[in-house]
Image: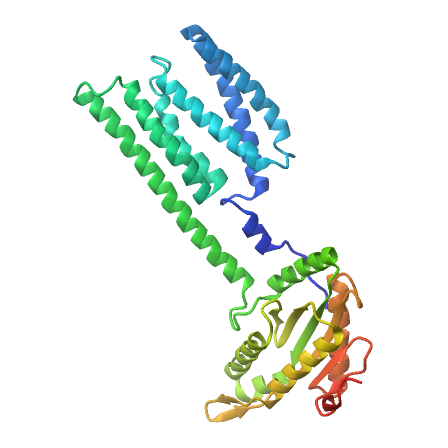
Length: 366
């Protein structure tokens, strides 16, 4: 059995702070740095003509830093620091402009951009806690920009600003909440076998990859087990695929009930399942699979008025004894399973030991 290569979707989702992955956030930051830096050069020149030299100097300095950031942000390991530095500095500068008389009568529009950038780059939680205080401060700064409320026209301007800010923040927060829920549902569907509720092949392979990395660091071992339901095709052919689905669901339930919380189980496809047993010795994994084999063999599944009896065969490979790579362990466990099938099925087979059938397991694996 060849282990498929694919990204670790679980880790990818866990590391994602927003709807954008890090590669996309870096690309967006480069674009923002370039656009903002270019815009500040133009604004700086205009502020010189407007007589605000200190503002112009600040904008020219910021543009130089942003142009340097276009190069650095692609490889920096401190992406989150760069994002916060950009947003906090940009938001603070927007508030400062609001407080400068006659600097810009339309600078308040940047307050409405705050939640867009914060949520996009930081996600819902961090985006809210960064943008909400700045938006509140922006509304207060706009109040002073209007030189207090002196007439109905000033009140209308202030209320338009406050209402737009509240609606913008609310809509973006609602959108991000729904997006996260949809992403989580898609992730669950992509990682779960719809019939049994177990991890599917891709998710199981991701778990195996993480287990390999963790065990390589800690020096601990684990067992990779491949289990196959014996003569499953007979059930489908004689009783129908619905009966076969009933068997698969029952087997999946028995696997999850028996294994420890540190272990992992997934459906690899068809009637084949995979198990990862953490921190277990070869003898213990053999005994555990023997017990599981016996429980499956002794069970009687009711299907309508019929009773279905099934057995299963197991192939076991151990890390690092039988390999240090996923494909090697899969191949070894698969060979053990095939050997057990040839020995009569309803067996547990471990690398280096001849397959032992259910009728002989009472005496141990010897």
